[in-house]
Image (tube, rainbow, N blue to C red; front, side, top):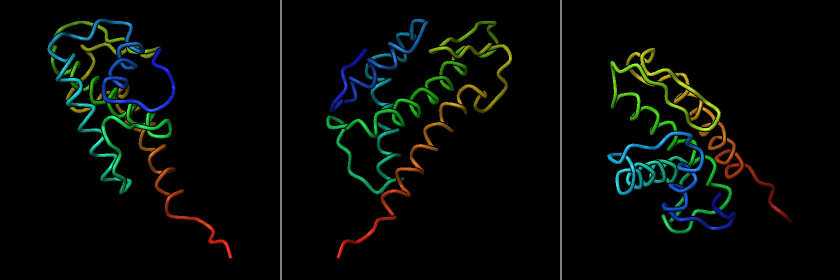
Length: 133
C-alpha cells in the first residue's frame, strides 16, 4: 500500500495496482495509465476550480482520483476484450466482461459515482463557509 501524504501520479498508479487482483495489461500500464490518471486529475481541477499539481496530490483528493481512474480503467479493460468471456476483478468487485454491453458497466459506474459524490461534497465545502468577524 502507498503511504499516506502527498502523492504523485505514480503513487495513484501504485494504489490502483494494489487494488487490482488481476494483472493490468501491459498496454494499459505505465505511461498509458499515468495519462489516464492525469486526465482524471485535470477533470477534478476543472470541476473543483483547483490547481492540484500532478506531483502534489493531497490526501483529500486521493480517493476521488483513484475512484475516477478505476472507473475509466474498468471501461477500458471491458472494451479492450469485448466479446471475450472473462471476468475483471478489481478490489472486491468482479465484472463478467461477456455481460458488459456498450457504455460503462455497473462496476465502472459505481467507482465513478463514488468519486463524484466525494467531489460534490468537496465542491460544496469550498462554496460554503462562515466568515469570522
